[in-house]
Image 1: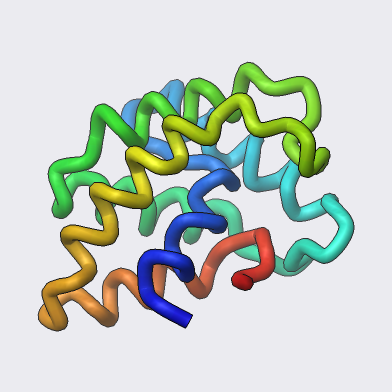
Image 2: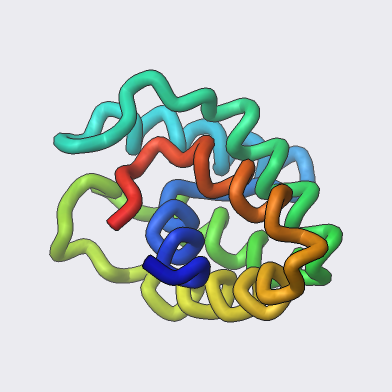
Length: 121
């Protein structure tokens, strides 16, 4: 499994930057925790906080905000067919992947991915 794959799927779970996005992230994460196959014990506050910090460090704030806003606008985050946020997810995944390729950041990237409410594939 490559690091970009580790990061891309969890990102659909949410995300946060500004206060409104932080609420979007936590709300989306709480919803995703209830999906079939999800990590029901995920710590959404930790996930969103780590995602926010990583987006700041990686200079991915606008992509992170876009994904959070898109996820908040969806009727059902659990349905596989709901791919309305794929472009935003890809943008965050690409931005985070560039940042995480540098081994100096691997612990931050791994910590973020490990708090995801969704299973890693």
